[in-house]
Image (cartoon, rainbow, N blue to C red):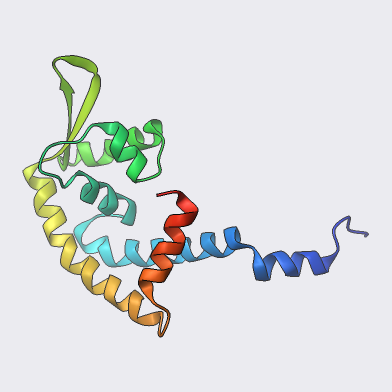
Length: 148
């Protein structure tokens, strides 16, 4: 069987592709945080979403979707299980029925408060695994890639 793309190219992509390496690292981090957040019944995505809503005033969907790099449809789907659990409330703005505000409920605040110490410990452990590599340098490089 002849391949149109030489195997050497496969090895080159495996060893150098930034997208592949970022995806692999993101999946590994997601699995790790899913595991550590399981006692508070949150996934890493749900933790990030609850944290994005932890503001002095309920934010509209648009800025939350932008912060999390999600489209509004994906954000709506991600909110549904949190709404069913009573952790999040979606409110219509009376003056603009097209705008929805996202608010943590008291149960959402309590769940987030229980999750933060778990996140802090897990996050510190991850950063320590980076050794001499500066975590702030990694965050800065990732921010450049995501146009944040």
